[in-house]
Image 1 (cartoon, protein in one colour):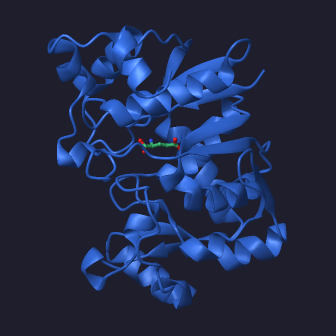
Image 2: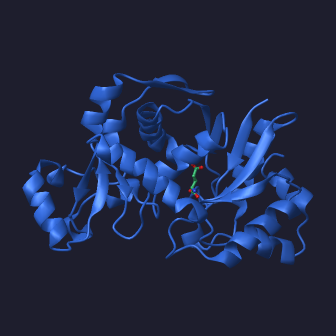
Length: 275
Ligand code: GLU
């Protein structure tokens, strides 16, 4: 009886790839488990309340139901900040003053772009002395906070995680480098908030697209550091369009809303993705 969740970011309308992902998560919880919906809206520059409303409308139209209340991450930013402060107090986090143009790997841990490996941060600011850090902070230079992955691993020792399709996997968070746990413009990150919330909400089977497999290595490390329960994972293949490209909001993939307007039924949409 697993607890699963669908955790979209309300940065646009849902498309058919989201429908497949939500139906997958829902099916994993059926018939006796719990299915949750979580809105991952910590990036206030990209998320919009009307998209959050539309997400619930689209999922209900598809015939899904979920346990309420819906957790809305932007309402819990102070909690994530407190978790991060705990890691900082243990010396596991350091300020990073690098700019994007310095070709750093903000993307690897940014809430805006959790997908894919992205460039690996070379650790430039990890080597700053305490005095250099203090000077820059006093000078008001904006900074992100990064996880010192090597230090973290030294505390946790080797870790594994279990994917129901892929088997037991040795965690290799170092492949993502020192990911960002708080961005310059946002006191948390995708990695931190998703890990915290899955534990808090009792999610014991994390389901999501296989584009996020790499992120799971970092989440496993964070779970060990924070002494959180360890779920199992399933990463579903991404739905591809006729050209073999994954559906993406930025490519203007046809939305569920548009499909509904054009007369498609929920049953047709479900059937088209195998449910
Ligand atoms: N919020 C993330 C996204 O929309 C998904 C997070 C997850 O399922 O772990 O890509």
